[in-house]
Length: 233
Figure (spheres, rainbow, N blue to C red):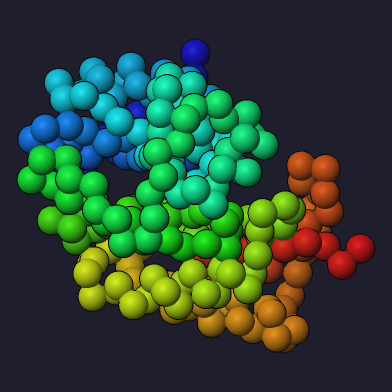
């Protein structure tokens, strides 16, 4: 049985911690939204329904395998349409309800605003809980390992995505990533963006090598996060 922890994070708000990945449940007066569905638990809907009496929908911040483990429990899932290729490649079969930058989903007295943050994957999104002034940021903004190697990754789009996200920085006070430390703060967005620009410009960093998911990966540790990049070899 896969172990997980449920943490109450505010009124109508829960974090579900599954090892190194976390998912979130947000409840309004009319319905609830699960944000991502974990990796190995395969019962995220059952867990969410044990926490709320509202009908539970699912939205994916993106479709990497560690975020869609329970997606099959839903016939339809909210997702950015640019993420469909990654979703299908990782075995996703649910119908996609498209959400795009600027869309707002109302749970009943609780509005969730969609912010497109491409680069880590084409359809990565942040989900802004307007009332709480919290951005659930998925993988692009975190103090852990940011995967930027393999199909669907683009450092150029990652920079564009972070620059776009910074335009909304006045609308949230903290960010809740899917991995590593929680919360993190808006200044991290600019730090990650600056480092990504330096990597693209070819500035020298100290790298280590690791074999991961069938590829040699080049890792640079910034001191507050790590970028996992395609190897030069």
